[in-house]
Length: 70
Image (cartoon, rainbow, N blue to C red; front, side, top):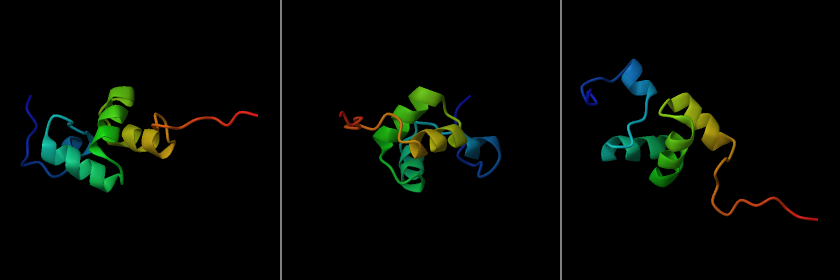
């Protein structure tokens, strides 16, 4: 079923549709990250906003993130 842009609450607000540019942009802004990171997070944990938020908060999948050796 296509994303219903008239919905402003409920299930539609709890899910991230990475196929809608405006939605991806808005989620990236609200999560203080880039659209690419949002797409990466959705691919890793699914489209539930709470799971994506947790994934990003934990810093998983960070580009250039390395454990220090020594």
